[in-house]
Image (cartoon, rainbow, N blue to C red; front, side):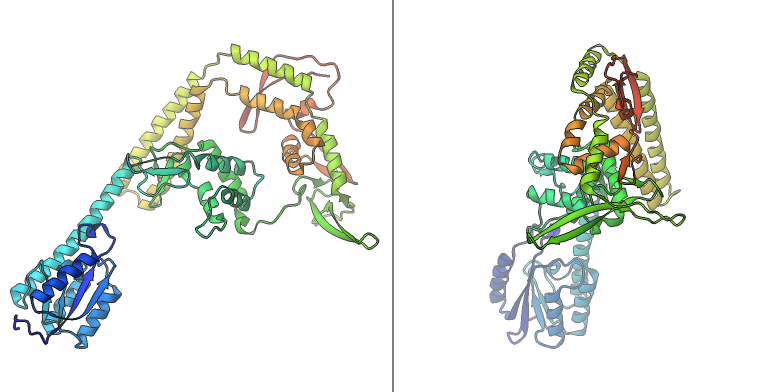
Length: 519
């Protein structure tokens, strides 16, 4: 093929630059065009059209490049001028396609200011090497990038954008707490852990604090993502695997676990949650044992042109063994009876003051030690570290597959984090039971205020604490037995004697309470 360019031979001028890392040192589009125009004028190259593409050449499928090749095959041009072969191809498919078109004569000239090429065996060999070097550079860079990310993960550094509540510190290359948004995330967790709020409520909460989509919409999916992200208690998820992080946690693991429990209870209807009648789920029918449900009734009064809404509670009557004849009861009457029942477990203010005084004295005198417990938990942590190492060895020796390794590793890391937090809490305070007890005394002394108040949602939450599942409704009368320690406050005599402090345990929380006056 004649290497002398005839002005009658048309050329396409092709310039390309992407945002990929490997293109960072390449001339900008404007600079490439200026250099190529000058080069074309100097070499007497006739340019049919300038084609500009802003897309990576790592994979086939560039529309401008493909269109240019199709037009060359149709005979619209017989040559290409570009800055360097890597502007034309960084993958084997596009590189091979260009070599084939040179072999068949569809492309007669390839001109580069930074690379020599002639359609000779040696020239095509050098062009093949140039394309191969471009692909090798891309592959090597990608592997080095992945290796760097894996190293960051091993160091406990999250190799991506920080989630809401955190910031990427460009100076230290670390993730730090966002002092403006971190309190919002903490409050989000605390609110949802109470069980009194829906996922939609949490999305509205985020929206009220400026966390919305770019279009200003409420982010329900964002709320669910935040509430399930292990990053907030100190771990992080990367490529489907849980890793220990070096960043500062925003919420304790205990609070995160409490949120997940609430999540599980509501998992059946995240996107279809409906408003719940205030006292549904609280009472059972005293006759057949079925749950009490609610109905909304509307009534129009023509004389006053007024429309009123009433809520009635009744048995669901779903028992297949017996027929239930229990009547309806108005919400106002049920609320009144529930308030009266709650007042029977209200702690008098003078007794609460004395109990708090005794707790203050106990806090000053108590010197309980938990060394044995801490030592035991630390041994368990050492055992878990050994299990993690053996698990990693098994994975590296290909004794277990990757999915099994990820699952078992996540379980062990979760157990380890739980143990570490329990040890930290015990080391920081050896009288941790005093604060829950103090909180219970204050809550018990405030029962009367909630029972007399208008906040029915708060009343329901407190009633569940006091009575649990012991509330029944029969013949329009509400009944229920209070659970411990609330039961000790029921039917107490007027003359009571304060007894020494005694530690009691409820569910998973330890409370220390004063033995209440006995009858």
